[in-house]
Length: 137
Image 1 (cartoon, rainbow, N blue to C red):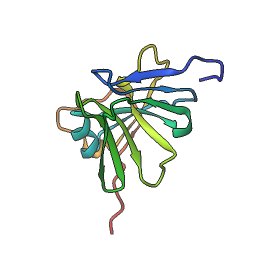
Image 2: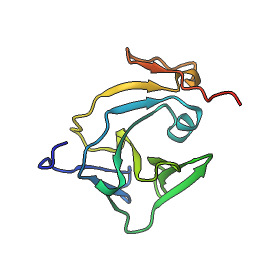
Image 3: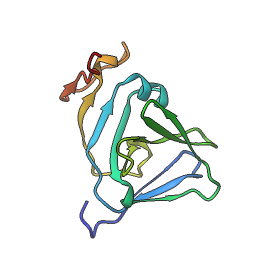
Image 4: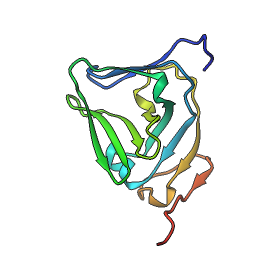
């Protein structure tokens, strides 16, 4: 996204939580890990942005965070929409559920991660795939 491009905008289903991104968005990655599947109800298709480029409109304080094992997941308290996730070790970047962006996004899906944890019904297009297993301890 160039500096003269209009901001990307998005929101939850009910509109209680909205956001704008003025900086570049990463291409979309589909994550099939168990946590993302359970947070979204399918795989998570997510882009990401620098927190400094993200402005949030949440007048009622409806963005709720759920923290688990080094990450936090953000959703709307009113409608339950999955909106964001962030890693504890990279708080300066938030991942954004791509489906919450207003089209046209200009984004493309470039990779699938954690495919070793994909559900048995999941089929994936021809994308580079990463098993992304955690190292054995």
